[in-house]
Length: 99
Image (cartoon, rainbow, N blue to C red):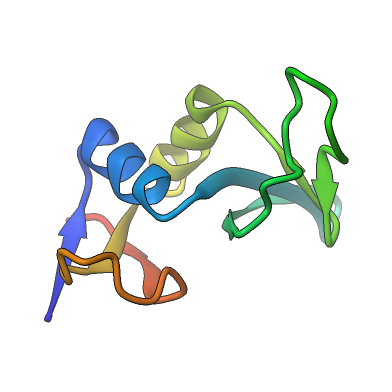
């Protein structure tokens, strides 16, 4: 089963419970750029504050939750996740249009 999350705190808790981080990438889109949202899991070395590792992974940049949520809401998106209480596979999420 899955559930759709729109509440900022619910999204943050779901991601953090699975060891995730918010990341963004700006990519060219015609004459302007668009922002691609993603979540990065298993990247314990990502730590912008303590500088323990790179702030970029695969072209995506580690960002604050505030910045990530602004991009999520600007795109009118929500996060569809597995509702497995044990955590399940952290890769089981998708971005969907917000109603």
